[in-house]
Length: 215
Length: 215
DNA sequence: ACCTGAACACCGTTCAAGT
DNA sequence: ACCTGAACACCGTTCAAGT
Image (cartoon, rainbow over all chains, first blue to last red; front, top):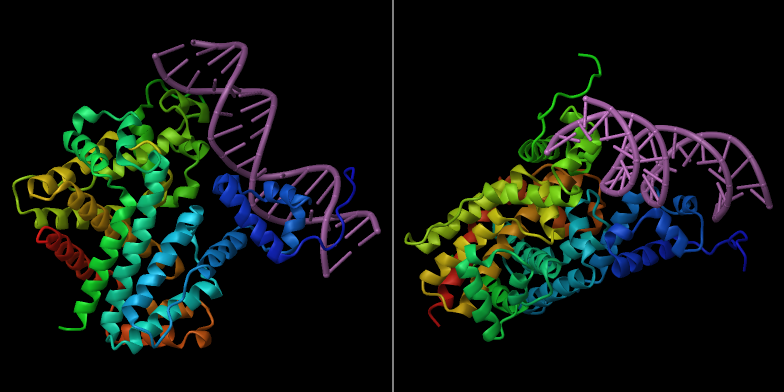
């Protein structure tokens, strides 16, 4: 029980990755250091390098893990429902792992489960009868909305939790922004929360995409 | 000319911020360290702390600088054109400073120029006759699209420059993703580039927002 | 008021060594 | 094959000191 050598084979690539994700979930991505992860695994820092090439490769793997959590649409069912479900699933995955989005932005090597997700969406769009250019537009616009919405949710979570009224309480000069102040008070009186706009936006985007095929 | 002491008053908050942004633009955000910035300014690292509380405050300032570059819509002109122009301007600012988006995600203290931008958009929406809840929906959906599109552009820039065909060349197993491979080849034959979808998406979103008021 | 110098507690990672 | 230990080149930041 003292600081003896760690027993053999406690480590594995999978344990490194899942504990890495857990550490990021619990303490934030900035706390995910090789050294801290090693301690969590009861092992010396350098032990990790036997299972992972370097920290960058670990981050690549973490992004792929999050993508694996996301629902993959299936060909044959109504495409609009399938894409809506994937979008909702993506949003909730990005909310469970707030570190994932910023990581995605800087990754250069998409993992296999990430590619599989893209493949599934493209398959659905292609068999739904979208032309190549329409596929590009549809996918670009839908993903832009979903990623962008998640990004705003994490920005709002950082500035003050949830409701718009609390943003003001966070101590910005509300005097210089009367419309913002007004919107915040009306919105909270109206029980509006930012997250409510997700379904509205999803419908706007899917409707717009559907209309692409009818031109 | 030797390593004598730096002359007084070479430094200022403004110089720290603008050179900080320039350094991030030129060498990437990961190269923006207090020490590297100090060297660029011809000064010892600790000198910066006399103009900026800490690195976090510097990053807050940098985000505000980028927001200051973005066009602010003005009340009185057609709201749809104004918001379209702001959206295009935001997209190009985020493309000129690829580090800005990831910074925004983690910032907790929006700067005055950032707040001013939000204020301007809200003013336009309010005077255009949107109800409070519609304002929330409209703003959420439009910004989600713009931020999300910019995010995807930076993701694509990291994985391989621009065109979809090059993604495949980047060495992922194309065999497991036939639809993706097919889409990539058709898209490049069709001269489709991801950026082309921006105007398509912008129109879809603005059209959808406009329709909100007619219900 | 503004800048320097030395130091502290951190990083990721290399390299050589143990079992 | 898998893990350790010491070391290197970095970080942001504190604290005391110079002018």
